[in-house]
Image (cartoon, rainbow, N blue to C red; front, side, top):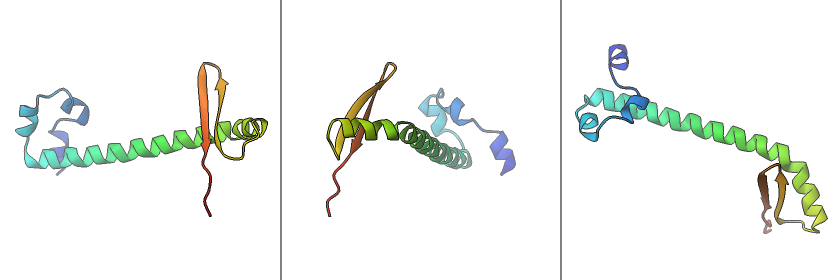
Length: 95
């Protein structure tokens, strides 16, 4: 299986291949590429979660202050950080 890994297109190369060439790849290559794509998607999702957690931590206190200044317990507040508008939503919890 290691020979197959070194003798096949990468995901990056696959982006530039005509679909007719992709269809013609050996089944083993397609299976390995499918696994690579799934792993890349999982890694991208973990990275997105990491970035979103960092953003939440960065703006948590400002959102609390903005919500207090607006007299709101829930809902959306907006504020600027440089050229970026930050929107933080805290939905109502139904008991």
